[in-house]
Length: 176
Image (cartoon, rainbow, N blue to C red; front, side, top):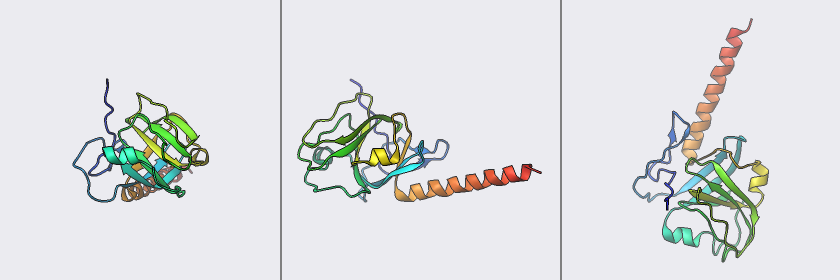
């Protein structure tokens, strides 16, 4: 049986400048906060600004159990995972199954409480987000997500803005 490769860098969770995606090198366990931003590059929309990484056996098993609700900017990123459960979770959630490259392979909107989610062998991780996140972000199967630290996300947008300005300047310089 194939074991999914963890598609994040625990130490850095940085952006590969050549591909614009997170690196895929496993590092040492971080002791600092494991909070990430999730951006849909295909649809150009944010899914969350406060996703918590659950990458240990205990944190994956616990998940959202015991929480009363999720705020609109919260969620958890279960890594590695091919499926999740909502046993003990008191509210429905949106589930986004991701492959090793953070491409969406399955969507489950408003997944009910006290259920076991579908198992996807081609899945490397799962995002558990508040209901209506999938709908409001217009996320679809095949979309490419960017999951990284807030400072890396800020740098991504800064570089993107500079590239757009350079493209606009080149276009205006070439026109009469």
